[in-house]
Length: 472
View (cartoon, rainbow, N blue to C red):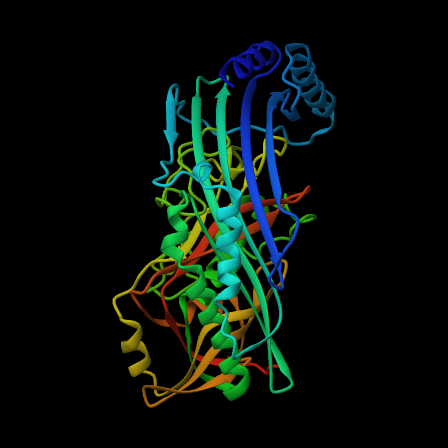
């Protein structure tokens, strides 16, 4: 990997004001069952390199999985020619933020139980065990379950002197189940993920986790009452806090969205650069994106532009504090990159992405928040979410919810609807618990689409005097 990357860099440097080369080797396994029956599994291996150059203020990018030197040279020439051809056409030349080079960095996520040591039979057996544990008393209208694991090895080098290698294993589970009862149905989308080895499966205890969620769906369908409407306190469980963090803070704080670069692909942002330092939420809200969390699904220590990753405080004490940047957007705003450039495979260009986005813990316990709520609703998890392309208006429909009266949980509720603007959501927070939990996801963005592993999460928190909407 290192030899071919340095060869490509040597070809690019005389032609470009900046050049970077990355080699990536991916090994991926995937197992699927539908309605309890195994489907076609996937076993994929790929290896390739990408080249990105800056010539005359324009960027060129090219990639290949043919690593013969004559072909690698041709790919470098193609990237340089692309940039030279675009240079006369651009109104605003691209520049990159000045960053410290990292001349010799190597990091590996260690696996206590290496994924390569677990055979396909054991992996499929584990997935079938989840299906077998589903409660027989429920009517399962349909189920889809997927278990996947991968190891990604990268070597990155650039013309500024950085040389970074990494190896990150990931394992994930995705389940989609539909339960029927009382002439109605309800669905749950369940996901787990980590940068770990097979030991993650033992920590997750998937049979118990999925069986519990299926039982909850059945209970809500059979005994849930119509959700109340009108102003009241709403307690969001960690799963709801997590999706709100990701959708209404993480995405609109991506600097490429803010600067209009993502408008045609993924939408815009209601946030502008001038809003840095302005209050958008309660002083109890600190919202973070941190790629360096050990074992996390969105884990990395250096991004795909060779910038060292760090904790990013997007909202600090209710005030907009920081955006997510790559080197190009950081340069446009006169800042340093905060290591947010990611791509999902060697033949995709790195763009601004989240990693692990969450609200920090508060000083309350969850029970204390419930006890201090006279009339309200606890939305513990969601079955549906919607948000507009500027990330301003958002809507969440409950999967598991309960009515609260005089500080006690009463009966389950069907389809409680939280519909609110982003500033109202965060400014209404009047209590934050200490029960931070994380939920895995694969975040989509870009053209062509790039799915990136992320965490989203936080603690339970209370929104004061929020008007609940009408469920279907």
